[in-house]
Image (cartoon, rainbow, N blue to C red; front, side, top):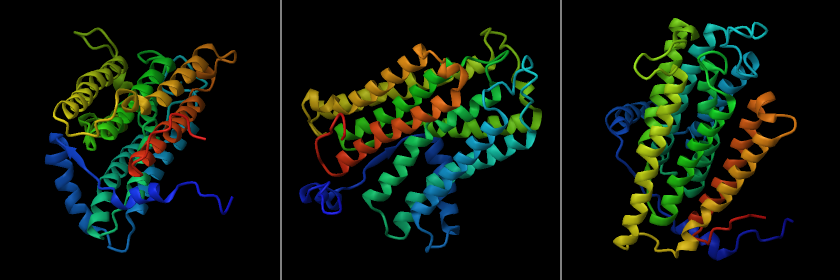
Length: 327
């Protein structure tokens, strides 16, 4: 095993020739977050490694997930119909807001710290975006603990579909980079991060009961409204722009100009994964999604990060053909 060459020299040479290219057109990012991050990164000592910032931010999300799992393992704590599940202590929402804000901040300054210390590398980007892909499931699951699946809530299956939608947004953005050579950062991410922090803070100040009502004009609960906003983000702010940018790169011949089959390959393993997980969630004899929702959410998020995303990153860093099913 020690002498086996997993990556050949011509593949490794791709790391040396790789150049990061991204475009961020989000007004929230450009006029709020980036000016704030530019100030914050100056407070970080130059001896602090960028990957340490990345990992620290990810750990904060794990802390949120662990604490919420301890107090609300089955998403019944916000339901008045399940007295066996007491409400989540109020201090948890303040912790969740602070951790979410700090995690997003650390994720925003790690690249700036890398450029500041002249330590940027494809492996640093792999570490950063790899953890981002894993974090994609922590965010909706954390928010779901506020609404739960009781009255004025939504089912664990519908949240599962939203979680898969978020992961699809993530993979399509990097699939877009695989074909165009440029990572167009989606608007929905920064909007979602800001919204989540505000929702956590509102819950801390007013309690989870503040969300227990029906919107007068739409005649839907607040949980269903947030669900609707997610789908509007998927189909209004992410997928159309992704497909347009790929089409434009082929039209003006500015992208990788891969054949159709080669261009679509990175999506195959993702769709197979989600198809199998949905079959399991729907037809499990044990009722895995209903009885152990957090376990299935965790399993799906972890498998997605490994199978669908990290190998795609490796392939376009190394300038190699994407393998749909890795060994």
